[in-house]
Amino acid sequence: MIFLKLLFLSSTGFLIWRFNQKILKYLSVLLLLELTACFLLLALTGYQFFIVLLPIISSYFFAGLLSKDEGLIDKLNIWFLILVCQVILIGESLSLLTAINGHSYLAATILIFLVSFFTVKDKKQSALDDWAQFKEYKSKLIILLKENQLLSFFMAVFLISLIWRIFLILYVPPNSWDAMTYHLSRVAYWLQNGSIKHFFTHYWGQAVNAPNTEFLYLWMMVGSKLDRFCGFVQFSCYLLSGTLLFICLRRYLKTAIAASLFIVLIWYSFPLMVAQSTSTQNDHVVAYFIMFSLVYFLLRKESLNKRLALSATALAVSAGVKITFVFYLLPFALILFIFFLKDKISLRKIFFWALVFLTAFLLLSSYNYILNYLDYGNFLSSRQGVHNHSIESISFKGFSSTLAKHLFNLITNQSGLRFYLGNFAYDYCRFIAATGENLFNKFNIPANMPGVSSLTW
Image 1 (cartoon, helix red, strand yellow):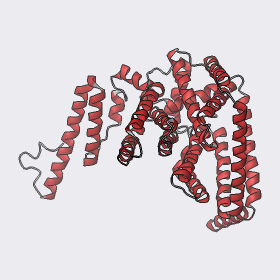
Image 2 (image 1 turned 60 degrees about the horizontal axis):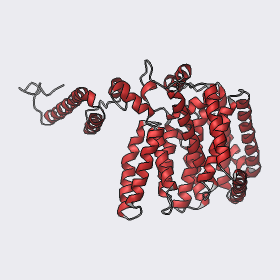
Image 3 (image 1 turned 180 degrees about the vertical axis):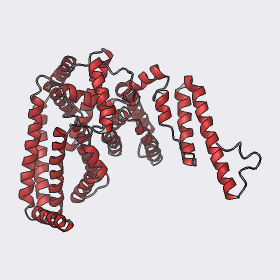
Image 4 (image 1 turned 90 degrees about the vertical axis):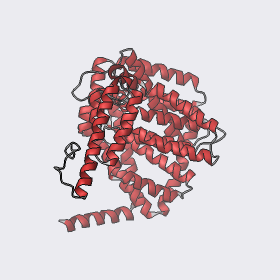
């Protein structure tokens, strides 16, 4: 059986290697047909189709204003950032009005579309320039693939993987644990109640967790009346993260184009990346915006503040996707500090970046944090949520990380001072008890020695 599998894989690989150009053409046509089928399925949903279509078009118009001097790949990422910001602002505004429903979404998207249509000039010329750039990139890629057989082979495998995963998104329900108990279930409640205000739930994460990814799922579900297309949110971030990596390799690290494409294809092939690319979770989303922030900070132009503003906005969006974005703050602060010491960025630019970040955070990511504080007296979560995220380890690592958590909560939650002091005292006693017990065992001190029992937990 193993021999037959190896024979099948080797023969398939040989065929792709030998006829790579024809296979790449057929695979590209098949992928295009599959995307066309997605468009038609969405169009059959009725007027809700325009709820999805109009923000995409208006974001493209707005992206033209911010990407006049940028390449097509840059414009693609800027367009997606604007689209996400637009969807979040629409969701927040309708939630404040308790008007999350199809008709309100349609009215909001039509309004923004009209503003973009009459505000942005040279839309036709911008589209023609983008099409010209696309054809230029396509011709260069075809030449590169003809010259590099191995790259063609990996590209064919990647296209097959894309076709299969789009099929999975469309025809396999998003039935993972996270989807059913958290991401999509909270969206269903929002649709029923017209607001994202907190609600009673047996799983506290539905109410307290950052909602920006769920705003995107909400937009897709309102626009299609189904959860069929929700998988494209993470799938889009998965694909766009590769374009950011390519930009960084080519412009910042000065890597050759063939080597850059190989690295991107390897990046796309990591098992965790593939496994989550069709799910309705939020890890690809938060990773993409953190990556966006770093890449556009590294590629900033000293004469312009645009890329710094994009970098800060992307990080602010990630703050409303998942609280794990905080793990990125310390490394980013170190990068800012090192660049400042080496005179690669001025203090004025750092203040500008920080100001844009704070403004974007207040507009795009603070909504649910404020709700948490009003309802639970804590910006991050309810008491149950804080307890469930506590680290029970009694090692030095566990104690030190728990200490940092308690110090943060003491700052952000004055009303829960006694609760957090009690938790800290509990963790402290466990740490001291475990340390003492290890010392006694190491030096063979009897456990029944007077005073030892008071240290055990």
